[in-house]
Image (cartoon, rainbow, N blue to C red; front, side, top):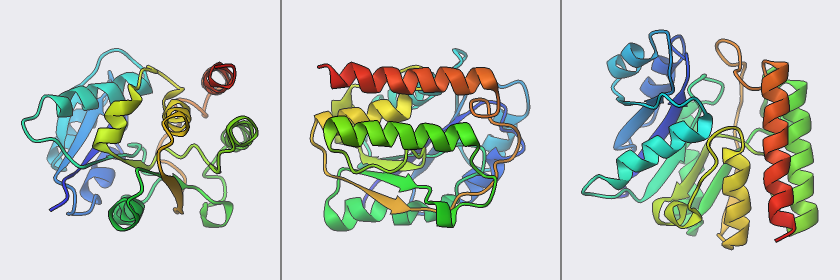
Length: 229
């Protein structure tokens, strides 16, 4: 039996987190919500939906993901696959089995849920998100010959491969760091088209000018850092 665990970073996602956790397929052995300094009812709603809840008070997407990984590393039984998904209910959690399928059936190491235009609800991605994704994936193709089309947060990776990446970004650069390191490590990767809808609440990144700028700087910083190595 393949052991799959899910990590969900969550900062003030009280209105959405219960939906996300409850719609995760039963193929998952544990759903881990990392409360990232929330001031609403994120913790209570995640617990009521059946998740394991951790708290990481240092604000940052990467900090939350690393907290979840540290928790898993201390368990006596290690999982086979880790899935990351956002807590805002913009992804469709029931598509998790579709995302892990290439790992199970084709021995892929890493799978991105790609938010293709034809599957996105109108308005579900902001202009900064769309532009940032297109620029980042273009540069990865230019510098590294990558075939990525998205930096989608809904993703699955073999746990042993994830450990090899030695993830370190604490904030906005988490997703692109993972993809760049997967390229550097020559992991077998692919993308699976997924549906995408308007999130519940306001994005902490693309929903603000400051967040969009910081995310863009982080993403470009990681790409240029790796391009000159």
